[in-house]
Length: 336
Image 1 (spheres, one colour):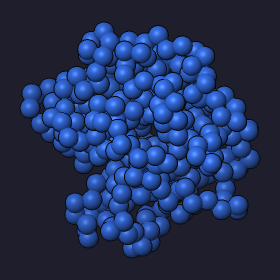
Image 2 (cartoon, helix red, strand yellow):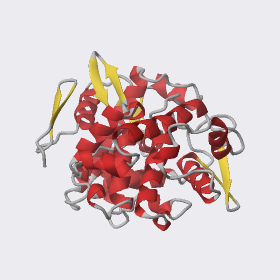
Image 3 (tube, one colour):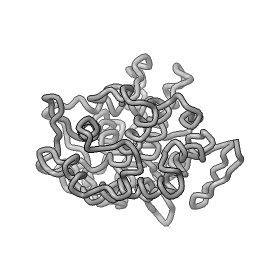
């Protein structure tokens, strides 16, 4: 492997000894939080019940079978899905009907893209993305309503096509070859090349990294698109949890995350948390750090477990909802 070093706001990322800046800055935020704290006892209780024999990638439960696609098409489907997977909430909530069922959120996006691919509306080839027609995108992303932040999603599709067409032979596989097969290198390259993956904030004059969609994309490529040299990604253990809506919601439900009264009231009343506000950064960073602490606890009996397995376990658990559940926090952002 080439010995590359990236500098990320004071954090040196050495390809031979990678330290994920997401984890480093989550530790800093957790130690200096005003609105969110982590309950260590609840982590211990949760880990005692954690089923280490039930660890599956979240996409195994998707409404479609991605393995039906050839390797190139599957890779480009996962790229497109990960790039557009954000900000689904609203009133009414966006849903998509597929095969007689309604889906929302990430499952809804998977169903919408698959439905369009089956109908011949969507080509899994970046050559067609750089000048993607607005009306075609609306056809794909309209369910009961047009998906929120549609203009951002259309811009992202076009950016993907432009970058891959200009520098990577219209192939995401060609893009992957520049990462030397290293998970963290690939995350950093995604954030460097594609603006929509630059998921960072600033707290107390310090850069805080999240890279939610970039990390999940890298993990999904490794788990769902293996089979070629370019998709043989090493170092998944370097990745952190993906700070979104569902993980902090579940961790709060499990009493692992505790919020100040003012923040709890804001969330429970459905009042939006501003992007890049201290409250939002603390929610996301404490989510990352809490999952890191869960991993450290679980490794006493499952030494090989990695954060991304715990991430998917939690996300899948969060899909089981009941009518008396508190809402999750609402932040109008394209990063998750």
